[in-house]
Image (cartoon, rainbow, N blue to C red; front, top):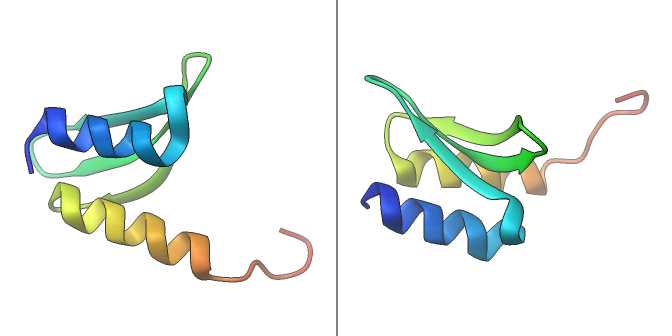
Length: 65
């Protein structure tokens, strides 16, 4: 998956706020909330980052979170 494809996927998932970032060893996907990057998932590839976001979405939060 290329950077542009990852950005398209992020926009599909999170609308206009969808955003992606990468550095030399990590890929991050999530939302740009007024200049603040809210990471939904991270990994060693774009696919892994989106998988983490999917897992995060499915896992119930504990009380007090």
